[in-house]
Image (spheres, rainbow, N blue to C red):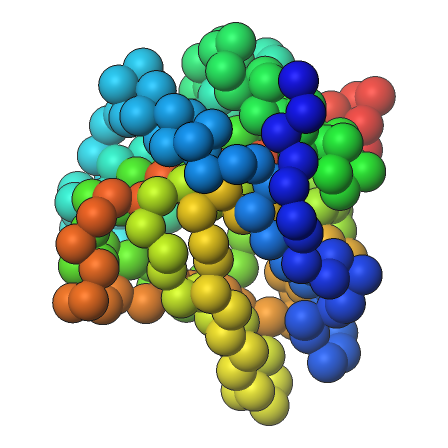
Length: 206
């Protein structure tokens, strides 16, 4: 099945230095993206995310899910998750993303933002379980949202609008030198699902 449609300039690096980010634009027709969003909303085992910050246990409005080829343990915000087995739909989407960006992934962290009041603060994805300088592919479904990068040293900020069905790929030293965030906004009233395909380092994949 060919899910590809018109694409953005995926060869252009959105970052001026110290990292590589490619925006591929929408990967699938609108009808397909709508169907994927509806299916993921109803079939994924969503749970409110949890974090321990300065010793305080916090539960977010945002929901998350962690899937993988193996029951990988993944620790962030001082909490650990064990990966559920990939569903058939997640495997199909993973294959689509891999074909588009030329990378291979073995896990996926999904985020569900119910509306624009839910976002993500500045952070980088540099957890010890992840392959060092490995690519992270972010597939967006649902409401269009602004996504921003900020250089850790000079504070330069680079915004990008993530469209329904679009793919953004971060790789190289991006996580070392840049933070990223999903700002909250009152203008967005619809849900958005973000699938971040990642590579957990294993003995055969350091």
